Length: 194
Image 1 (cartoon, rainbow, N blue to C red):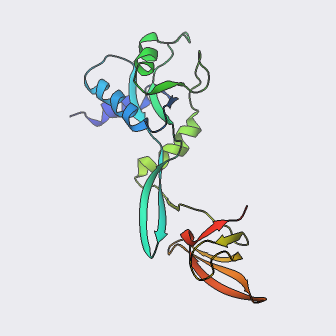
Image 2 (image 1 turned 60 degrees about the vertical axis):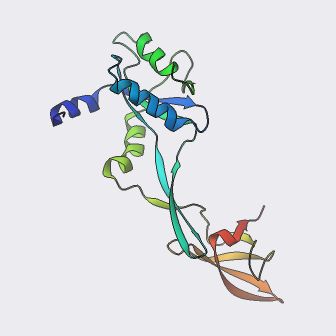
Image 3 (image 1 turned 120 degrees about the horizontal axis):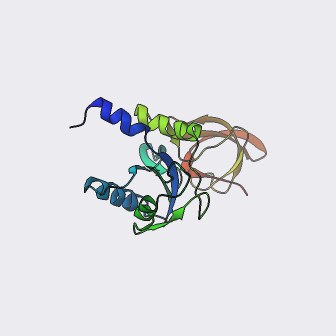
């Protein structure tokens, strides 16, 4: 078991780079990199991470929460890609590039650019605190016009008056027989008008 001083030292090594993967292969690539590191491959690669967020959706009064990738087709790898002279470390480069499903590095084919400290902090903060904010799967705005796609008022259009993200419901003002009528619907019962 590692002590805290070793973990702190490890957290400070390397820079974060974005790696482009085949769509849907992010987890497989991350797991392959981590497995090879655990097997004792001596390369300056330290960590692989997939930024995610929690998304809630309410359907027929049942609230479900799922995890969604923030950047599908990409993952982050913390590594020492460049030596002190700014030359690419061939061992680290080929270690990542040879993983099945990796298409390349983001930010330049021959000289990838690492993420800035502020970019890393912004996206790592929820993962480090263990409190990923939960967002509704579909985000609506008050005043937005939507079309009802299910229920008694199917194919009617209305303007959103209230949004209840906790319950996954919207209150619309729908014109029925020439009069504005408030109608409460679930998120999944409406769609944006084009």
